[in-house]
Image (cartoon, rainbow, N blue to C red; front, top):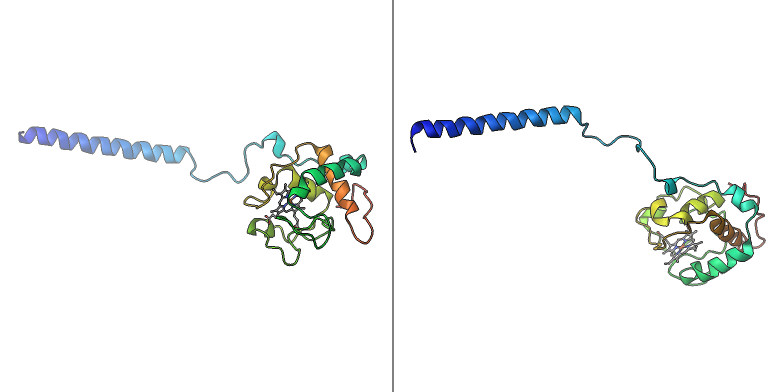
Length: 171
Ligand code: HEC
């Protein structure tokens, strides 16, 4: 290994370092390194459906079947009942994550300034995980808006002492 060979290796290492540095500088100036403030696109099923028109023709009888079949696996429907989830009696109109004695996830408590009205329940039931990422309600969601409206109409009947009227506009 003579001196000229060592020189040539040193020069080529230097040249490639300069070339890589240049490429990095160009790449950084072309591609912004921060995420855009607003998403460039939304998946269709992420768009919140306005539930009011579905509430108008909601069937609380069908909703009752859904709730007793699906939700009651985890939720007690009457006050004082036990379940993995919080009691659903009086949930319509209740402040989010506010039932005394129930240990809500931090994810749901972040929504604690809000009230469960029809639209919010619909957004939540579309996909709990998307509504409150990290929620402990491990339920995929009710994709059909009429199913959601029916279930919400049934939740209205769980109000004490008297059910709230289903107006479709009690937001
Ligand atoms: C696999 C169990 C499970 C199923 C099924 C389930 N839930 Fe839940 N639900 C939970 C848990 C657990 C929480 C508490 C979530 C948290 O703290 O993140 C919860 C929370 C809720 C809340 C918030 C209540 C409050 O006090 O803020 C509502 C409303 C709700 N569920 C409605 C429903 C409805 C309606 C259905 C049926 C369509 C349903 N859930 C199905 C487990 C379940």
